[in-house]
Length: 207
Image (spheres, rainbow, N blue to C red):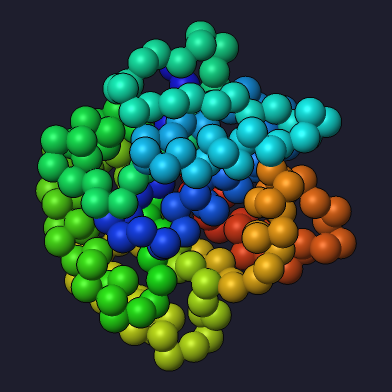
């Protein structure tokens, strides 16, 4: 059975597609058979995938708008990029089908306010309460040494959700995305600092 990861946040512009594509790129670089599912009507992840060079490690696309179709039998990892405003029945249907939920969030009051009800609903889901599905958070476009990062950690402590890592604000993600690539497709010398920031996230995904 394929290992599945849902990337979710109710607020648009939180970094869901950046995380989804880069997680897919990591697994593809390891030779894993990856499927990137896009539940968002904007289909940002699949648009990115259409730009991916033939020479890059392959990632299969999966349009999810019409529902949860079964992936090909040889799929090893599924990453689902979800829409803004995910809640209720759709959230419940996705959470009970995945092994991990990653929530990207920026350390601004607006992002934290927008995410408050989402965390309450997500953590109340039966699959999460029964520890069949695990939830982690990634701080996006932030330096962990800043006051903003500390405020985000304080906010998240109320929900007892682990902060898996911090993704800094760098044009490397934008430049790679425009070419259908991820940090894991670029020369190690260019991305060493950023790949190091990903290590705790990838370790949590593999546990």
